[in-house]
Image (cartoon, rainbow, N blue to C red):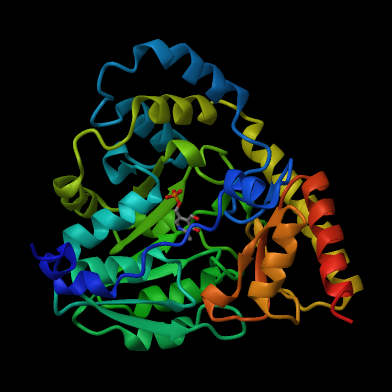
Length: 368
Ligand SMILES: Cc1ncc(COP(=O)(O)O)c(C=O)c1O
């Protein structure tokens, strides 16, 4: 019998499966550790809102019914909060699923996608799944090079991805820079503002991209409940775009894409006025602590507007990763982002940050 590899679509062979890093349970078992500080996936160390937990507990015995296929309550709550029309919102199984829908709906062989290098993994994956060309543009000074990205756009470009804040680097592009981009990009291309870390930003130059949506520009803003809202394990995110784009996305959306628990927890979270400020403040304090420690250690880092920091350890990032893991702390290697001496670390609770810094100091001390 033919191997399934021989049956698969040719374009799929270019996909390198997403590497999630080891789970805490795997690391604990492998190394005989009692506890692991996971600072590898940019999750919220404070967890979900108590209102979300209540909502899920109340719903637990009702999960034998399918969820609302249109996620009406969640869509209306979001529309209220964002001051947009409900028709301009699509809810997904994480913003990942909205990216996937964008690929299914708009991208075909012969078209191309523009994004930065290093990219967020889903962008090249979308190109590969759909058999499109990848046009990746090197980051400049650890930021998106929007001018070069705009130059890479042609009449076959379907999507241009701007992760803002930029995962994995943590930098942002400003409102003026985005204005310039929007003035240049042709309306045959959809600009995707991927704002997964939106709630952590405090830079006043950060753009209000919903403004473009309200003006009917050819763009979509993606946000998620996975980060500041603390619901990564439930998988719920959304896109906000002019109605014509949302209508097309709905044509490829699975009918019951977002689970009943996910919808209810997201709605309940939106009613909690403390969830985002609490997460934001923990992040600002943790970011400051990390900066001070890195400065003391003489390490270069990229100032961040997200809940993670890229830092140059000066040693091979895979070795650094292993040494940190043996001390019970997991991070991401820079290797996977083409930055072989860097690591990306999520900002945790004060205790987690302390454990990470102590472990890193030990690892780097052993270098001398
Ligand atoms: C830039 C960026 N976009 C999108 C996502 C996807 O988030 P989710 O699918 O959990 O909403 C992430 C998650 O890490 C991200 O970093």
